Each structure stands twice: as structure tokens, then as C-alpha cells.
Image (cartoon, rainbow, N blue to C red):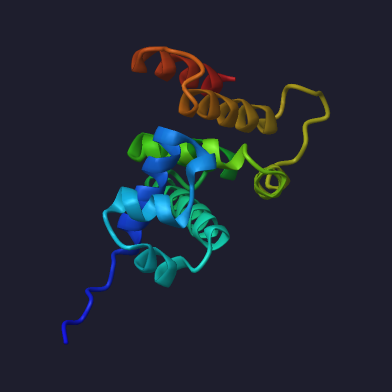
Length: 176
């Protein structure tokens, strides 16, 4: 009897991201991911079980990608670099390394209250790293939030700018 080869989970998650980008989150189902990946529905179910677990694994992979970028930026930065600066640069690096991955996650998290709450918790954790400025609009939390907003806008394709123009916007944030 022939053994079934173990499916590559990252390849299946890539197929789920591609499905989100091409057809939206409403199309994200076990059957549609199986079709996109060119595997059986059972293959997807054996790896994820449910759509909710598939979504959870997509988010965990995205968070792992961000953490890898944080480690890369931290390792390359002087010890005097603030945690906020590291987070800002790491988010940009994660986007630059995998823009489609990031875009799919932005689309995904906007689709449910639970996923938006998970994103809020993530932001709350990042903002807790910085002391709030006594003067609104002057602290590092503003740079962090503006950076994240620009990456979301770019990921969702809301503004068509050349890479050079995006770079200039990010440099403006860095100077403030």
C-alpha cells in the first residue's frame, strides 16, 4: 500500500494566503484551500482540522515572521536603539520580505471582531513598551502607530506610491 506524503504546512498556508488575496476571506474554506494547493480536502483537514485552526496558524506564522524580523533588526542595531525603533524597523522588514503575506494578514484581521481584538491586544502590547509622552503627538508611540498605519495602507493597496515615495514617508517618520 502506498504511503501518502506528508504535506508541507507552509505550502498550505501559502495557498490560503493566495486564496485570501485573490478571492477574499469569505472564500477561505478547507475545500477552497485544498483546491488552491492542489491537494485533497482531507490533506488540509489532517493538517488544520478546522477553518478556525487554519486562521490561527496563519496568524501564528505571521507573528513568527515579525519576531524573526525583530531578532534580525535587534542583532544589527546598536545597543542604544530603543525597543520602539526596533519594532518599527522590524515591521517594515517583515513587510519588505513578504509583502503578499503581510497583505493577506491585513485583509484577514479586518474580517472579524475576534481577529480585530487579537490585533488590538498586539498593539496594546507594543504600546506598553513605550512611555506615553506628556504632550500628545510627540512620543514614540506616535511614530509606532503612524508606521503601522502606513504599512497597513500599503499592504491593502489603498494608496499607489512608488517604492521611493514609500521610503520617503518612512524616513519622515524616522526623523520625528
